[in-house]
Length: 321
Picture 1 (cartoon, rainbow, N blue to C red):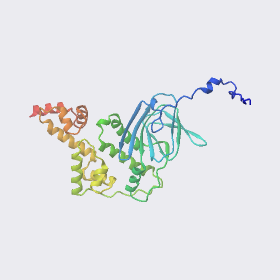
Picture 2 (picture 1 turned 90 degrees about the vertical axis):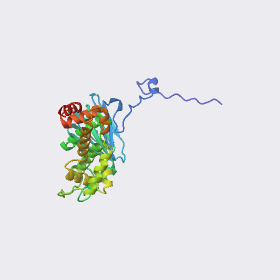
Picture 3 (picture 1 turned 135 degrees about the vertical axis):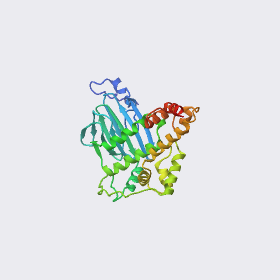
Picture 4 (picture 1 turned 30 degrees about the horizontal axis):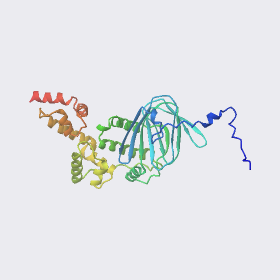
């Protein structure tokens, strides 16, 4: 029996058959926020107690496409660090263009698919806040329970911009970052987000005067001193005192006049000054004993708070003595 033959499929008009056989170019690798990883000038990250902090910078004006699938990751807050960014956000049936100036923010929930064409370069600090961290902020807030966080795009927010700026040195030098400080700023940003952008927010209630008991104050200070490098979280100390994180921070500030991070930095510098009176002790050894990552980190912080580098301060002490 003669075998039946069939003609090969004919390529579409004007398209060579060899072109149809070529594989499509591989899509560029993307990071966890949907950015093209190879285009990022800055790609920095820290995490603290349910909050991930990123800095993402693209200097090129070449258009970038950003896309993330719907998930249960929580809420993403982006704060623009410079002027001149424009993006087109692609919705199911329409698209919207938005211009971001310095200090403009966007807020979105990861439960919604997100697609956007970045039409210019950008420089953003971003907070990925887990549902657990957000729920803790809701629980800490006095008054009626919150319904969620309202989405926003290209809305100026000076408070979030200021706090994001405070995190950029830690992102640039993560080895020198105090986790206590990062945790404290992330908590402040999350609490502010609930207050300023929470849906169905009740009328603000006046704060009550809150202070730590003597035993709680002593316990908190002991725990802070035990981690001179700042490697302890607000949650650990608040849990040890059986207090909420927001109550603890407010009460610590009311009690001592300083935030936990400010108090710890003062303790580190006080200890450093005492050790510097041993004129033969190397500066690197003093830095390590006081919880600084290295001598240059110690010199920067010491100079910032005392107005003079530690070596100069010690020489003056030796002359005066």
